[in-house]
Length: 197
Image (cartoon, rainbow, N blue to C red; front, top):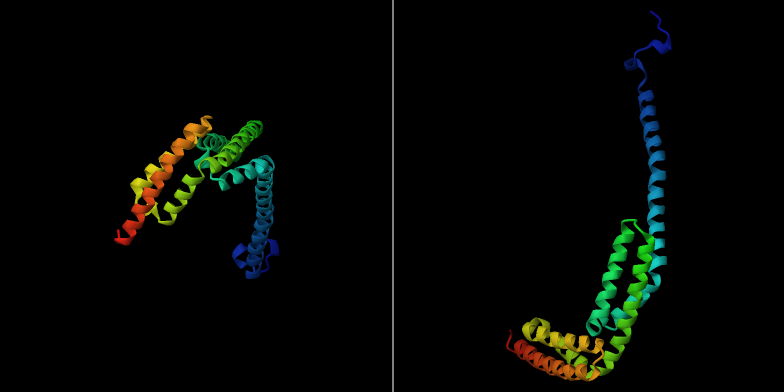
């Protein structure tokens, strides 16, 4: 008996027909998904471009503040700047209010710039304390004399906050206390290392 070709059941179709259908479905899927992936990559690049444009100057100022140890030498201004900087980054990541992001980034830049100026002054005012701190770090005081290290760090932090408040003389006196604390911490750390502690 002869059947017209279009009336044959699917199971009687040649095998290569199913393979062609499968291949064309795979190709169709690839053609559909590829533009989406490209769009996603372009969107990520454009978001990075927007971030670089908005944060660029502030990133540079923050980097300079970090290099000057402003988080230690100008803790208040640096912390204010970092809070605004972080908030702006989170707001941008959520795709919200770009104007608010720009305002926060600009304010953060101002705080980081202020922290740089204070850190530069602190490096001169606290020169001896910072030298003593470096010695304590070399002796691994944070590991071998942790309690004393924490006290010395708190002394330096207090001096830095006083300096930020504008009292140069008192800050200098507190820096002398911090220097003594670091020297004692270094000695204790060296002793602990020598005794295997």
